[in-house]
Length: 138
Image (cartoon, rainbow, N blue to C red; front, side, top):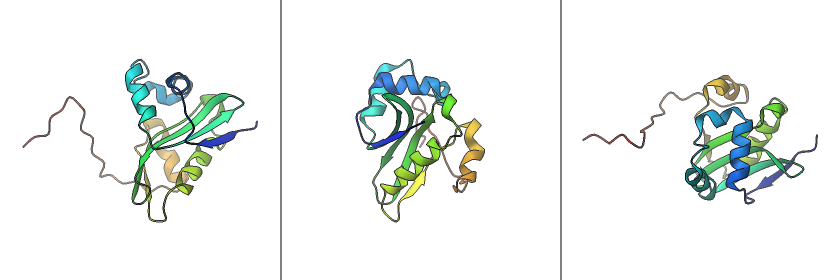
C-alpha cells in the first residue's frame, strides 16, 4: 500500500462525500446537503489529504490561525484502511504546518474517543456546542 499525502490540494465535494461515506464519519456529517459539503471543503484553510493512487482515502480538514489554535474539524479514513497509520500521519502532517505554540483541538466522534488519548491528546471537558437553530440567551 503506497499512500501519498498532500497539503491543501483541491478536493471536490464528490470526493469528500465518497470518503465520508466510506468512513464512520459519514453518519455524522451532512452528506446529503451538497451546498453544505461544498462550503465545508471550500472554507477550510488547512487540508491534509491521503491518496491511494487517485482515490482519496483519508483527510484531516482544519480551520486555523496557524499560531494559537487549529480546530481539526474532520479526521476521516476509509474503514478498510483504518488502523494502518493513515489517521496518525494526517495529524502529524497537520501539526507540522502549525506554529510552535499552536494547539490542535478536536471533538472526537463517539467511536473514536479513546483513540485520541492513545496518540497523545489530553481530554478537555470544557467544550460547548450551540446548534444553529438555537439562540444565544440574554
